[in-house]
Image 1 (cartoon, rainbow, N blue to C red):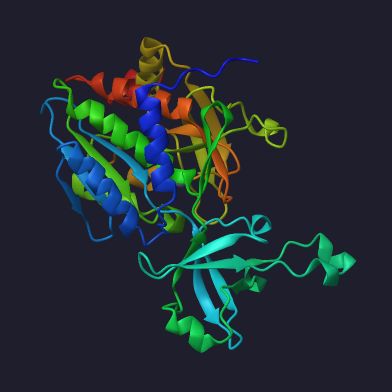
Image 2 (image 1 turned 180 degrees about the vertical axis):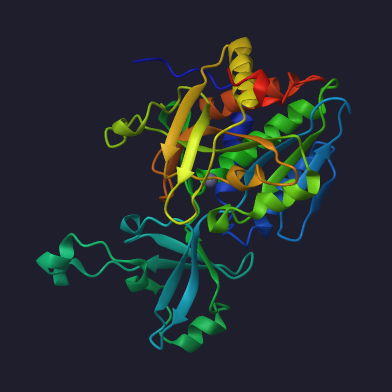
Length: 376
Ligand SMILES: [Zn+2]
């Protein structure tokens, strides 16, 4: 057995902040509680924060004017549901918000967000097994058929508790520390990315001789991937670096999908595309691919590579902002994505902090974003 490496102070901070953020509910469009926590973290680093009209949290650390400017961003929101209908019996029906995996829903505990301190715990019903027919046994219920039971016996009682049509519903928040520095629970996507930004900011604000960096915690990624676009339009950065999950493909069910291992190091996406509806994706600017490769080499970090259809992030829209932004997706390997028990490895988060800091510090005056310098 390989011994578990001793946790570094950075890894410990990442573990406690990620776990804390994972347990704050923040459905797309309802990110306020996560935003306020992150604003406190950034203000503690001496950075002023502001919030735009879609709820993005922005903090800028001004740097040397002759270097390219950077927007480093991760999304605060998580997928979930909104209340679609309250039945006379007190049973609640849901509308989906984001890529909810229906087969992972039966028997889940959920949290109906009313207000801090007044949230309501509830369960997603699983039909009594004694009454389940052989045909029903292997059928996944579409979300339209799912019943949420919070214990109320009438629609009036549901409404009196503060629940209404459009109330936010998320997986019951949890963070579970596992063996070997791994962390499982809700909204690892993308609270882990948010925690990485806080730690990168801690390092960058204490460093002179660096570019201007805009730290952006964005909204509504799981809804329609446009929240960060507003920040990019307002900030007009030269470069955008997005931090989010990368699909880990080292479990038996994922091996044909790629070559990204959990705990093996941070990863960069070289190709993403979503062909179902959005027809969008990101092919990173070659200058940034080269920058990340050089940074990983100098930091002696393993940089894993991902190329996936079916994955899409905010960067696909951010790259279209203003006169165009050189964009790249970086991330931490993540298992069981969009379920209530996603998993990451704190060593990967630590590697991602080091990688992104090293890359930003390498952005000197005259850094070329001319594609002809790279497309050989
Ligand atoms: Zn995400």
